[in-house]
Length: 190
Image 1 (cartoon, rainbow, N blue to C red):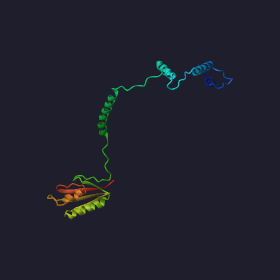
Image 2 (cartoon, helix red, strand yellow):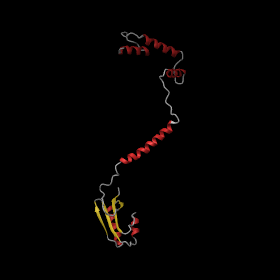
Image 3 (cartoon, one colour):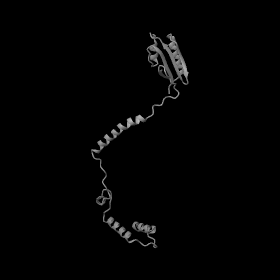
Image 4 (cartoon, rainbow, N blue to C red):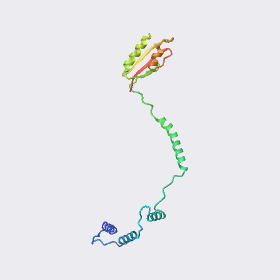
């Protein structure tokens, strides 16, 4: 069938005037008459009407319209259980292959010494100097060393302890070392 034949068929079916050069297809004319007769008899397939119901029944009989798949009651719990099982297996495996948490590239690394306590402050230098001054008022030898944006405060603590040291450190959220040395790394607050 050519495009002109198709156009003539559709024009006949819709009731448009057909070109005289293209013959009127007899099957299109017969189909048009049948549709118009059904419509005049009141058999239109309006939503909720009998025509729509007949059409749906006929389509199901011929296998052209399938029922929507229904969830069976037992499938949902099994699907949830399978999902949780998969999650329980995937998390440890994924965790094993994850890279370690990134460290601050600028933070100094101290080896072979007491690990310094961490203190974050908006102005690390000023905070380090205030801590050094407070430690010196207690009679301790304290010093602050800059490492880029970081400051390391170090002080030697006598084994007998120092009165008032615990209060000064607790104000900053630090713990009191038991003898030895105090090391505090003051870093900028992000």
